[in-house]
Image 1 (cartoon, rainbow, N blue to C red):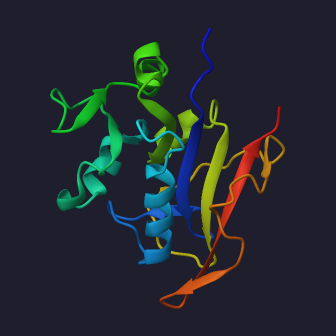
Image 2 (cartoon, rainbow, N blue to C red):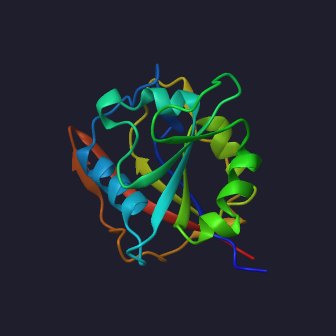
Length: 185
């Protein structure tokens, strides 16, 4: 059997684990958005793209002028949408999407599967993901959507990606740092 594609989660998380409020990010951190874009777009194999998997609410939270996310295979999970939005693969469940993306046909075109939100999609992904890329925002924000608590024995800090800087960043009176957690076997 062919090797499975890696599955990574990526999120920016406030100190209270908040990731969003009213379908929006409660902060403006251009450095974090640039890191998100770079990590989810870059591939080692030029003829491949990465997939970004998200729930319907996350899809709707992306400003329409940026949908679908360029240079990535956009996957939206929804039980209520009947037709996929333009440029999107639509699935009704997380496992259905992952199974399709892990098929031989997709593995020839996709390098990495990035799970980009929301809460329930992250929750499902934590069972299978290989790494978690978190931007730790060192401030509490009023949020209505949260990143799930994950097992810190199973996912431990790692310096596995040279693209991820280790220093503390600051923007708009908010300090943040990028961290990578890798699943321990």
